Length: 146
Length: 399
Image 1 (spheres, chains in turn orange, red):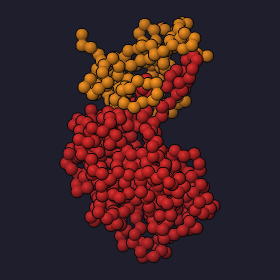
Image 2 (cartoon, each protein chain N blue to C red; image 1 turned 30 degrees about the vertical axis):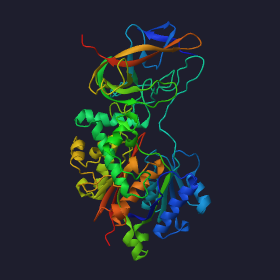
Image 3 (cartoon, one colour; image 1 turned 90 degrees about the vertical axis):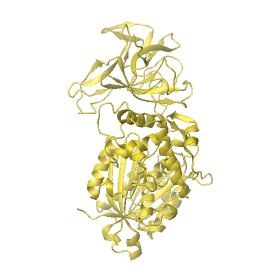
Image 4 (cartoon, each protein chain N blue to C red; image 1 turned 135 degrees about the vertical axis):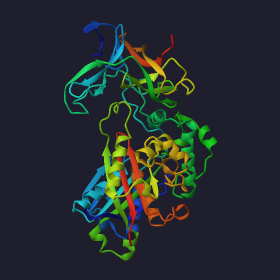
């Protein structure tokens, strides 16, 4: 069964979009959600059997800041079939939580991508399946001074 | 303090392309070399630690079927690029536990032409989006959310260090590769033995910024093996065997402890620092006592951070350490005089023992043209992504 729901303010609404990963929350203000250990506060992404920091078993989902700073990156020139190269594989520091994502909407070259640059989350369609459901991906784009 | 365990014999094959040899030919060459160097036979072995990452067999048993089925316990181990060090440590622990007097450890890999190593992950299926895996991903994440290709992961790690402390740019990383390619010109067993200029290195194809091809470890074929012996057993052997024996002053294996963000960007630092600290304590030596170091330069960007992790410099001082010339073979702390993984080559499971072979070779005074004169103490380090870290400190026999 394809997942054709996305969470919007706690409701399950039938929509024809699915997030690329389940820690991407769609809706009016798309954001990422981390699993935060209720005992020690450690944050991870994706399902875990227990906390890798303290081994407690309860997590709550917490919204991660949508703006951050480029912590580190690489510009990958040789990737798997079907993926456009080059791509900027980045680790972004979103208010103290490290997040994986590509840097998008800027040329993938070292003249345009530097550690420490300010970024913000952005979402975009990445394809449509045979049932007509659109998958939504995310990346981080340079934060324009305004 | 318990009695030390000794390396009685050790051997590495030529690293490079061996199209005429299968994996068991390579392993046999490594193991027979080590047995011969030790002056023992298969029949003397009490335990085997066996390493191979990309194959599928029980390599320790498969090897015995070619060299002698002696019925002893075999531990087939996999810790990715730390596999060889792990195999050696297993044999050593069996000796320490009193279950064996003589142990064999080997690592072997057939890697020529394997291309880039990494986990593409996921499945590009047809039909409908189906969330799979722990993150409910509907598409493979490589190139869409992250990268797991090794040159890129270790680029991220090197650039993280550079951003934190400053001073590390593309050219600096390329100069680290220049050093290792220069060192390998003296190593006849290296996969590459041609010196490369800085300009050549920087103009090689860019694999994953800032690592060009010449800054990446060389996939190749090879094997390395060691015969370990208890202190009590060594005392019963010949003076010549005792003279050439290498003391394992420290043997440490760590995995990565929790740190914030460590499941987002692999933390290869904490476990290396911890392993080094424990190793220095075990051996009763400090970084300043090391005559040479073989560290895990799987990429030029990795070598930089390990100067710091192994405490060869002040915290944050890796760039200054390199700029001072210290890690060149005529420097204060020669690093990767073998040519390192970038130039000697990196047949994954063999690397952890090959690094120990290199150190042992110098401690015995048998390293020929590339001998570090008067070497008495050396350190060998490997990292397996995932993460596993092995650190061994080796000393020349007192006699």
